[in-house]
Image 1 (cartoon, chains in turn yellow, brown):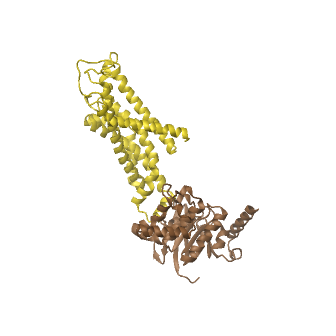
Image 2 (cartoon, chains in turn orange, blue):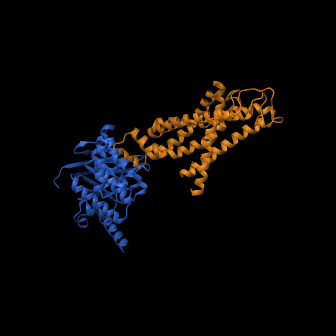
Image 3 (tube, chains in turn brown, red):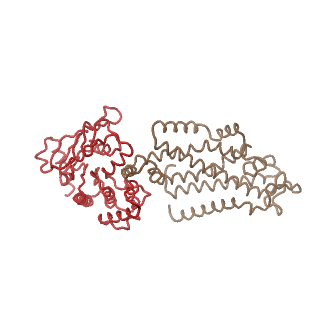
Length: 270
Length: 260
């Protein structure tokens, strides 16, 4: 990676950080209450009063998008954090133990991964009912497998390395081997996967919300804003345009960031 | 030599996959105190497998081995840890012996922490001391392994092995990955420390000429068997097997070829 590319990478990283920051301080910079209905200004075009217009019950679209960022990012990161820790943990156990435990975990992962992820998630949410917590739960049941599988392979590759043999000869026990030798050496490919998944998970969550299975109205979330605005596509296109744009830009941003992180950390084959 | 017996292997066997695919066939050997014993043979003759078995990195399928006449074939986790205080190994490729994300200092402190030999301060003093005696600058302690050369790394590996005051050090092709001059330095260093601390060396190599120079006796291996045991005074004369003679002359020829 040359200096120019590095420069671009830092800029994109800065944009992502600014973005997350804005999502966190949404209550401070949003012009209106996202739940406040103003019946004198229903379906108003973007203009002076409301920068990005209002929706069918007169709520400020800009404020809803800003608050929605908080919900979307919050859900994404809590889900990702959960599956990351859980997946890496299970993957490490599988990689280190080998034999029966390993084959059991591998089969389980294979079974879960054999379903298309959105269909599987819809199925689970259908059973346990919609809602923020349930959506996160449904997606995490699928998503941990990716980290577990990646971790397992990485752990096995290091388990047979000479430096782990050397570590054992220096008296390191299994736990010490894992935390001192294995995890530090596999953290970069996992980090790339993590950043790449931010966009993917956001898209999956927005998709479920759009289908009415994720975040329930009136809580603002980009997916369900699209869902609610669907009926007004021809009369009030800004109801779809701005949340759609928000999803598009955020997902692109984090995908580019993920790709560049991979180049930055100089990792091949993920 | 009328020294004490340190290590003894008794009919060690090993096969990979099916029992027909034997890599070690009833290998027996003896290593005495402060002796340097060579294990020489071509690639695939089972010498590295032997080293991995006696360091408990793989399990043997048959046979036993003894450290000071104590059976060491099957050990619990705790016993293994004790065992590693007595038996240390130096690997072929110095760079792959180091975790890429661990500084040299941490690498050298590892045995102190894991075996609870001393507190951190005392450990650091010992590490500094061993670095000095290896003639390595102390700045290296704060470097990562990829910043050092192979020879320097191998010296650090030896330093850590020696730190524990082991009874036996296994050198599995310890110098094969290094160039000839560095090879010589490392071997001189190893011999010097051996004189000082009097441990035994199990020197595994494919270079019979090198083994001849530094070992007290040599086991010649072929196809998983020990072909013969010879002293190093006069290999050509003593060698009973044609293979040994061929192997030796081949090595010599190779050296001449390289010198020319």
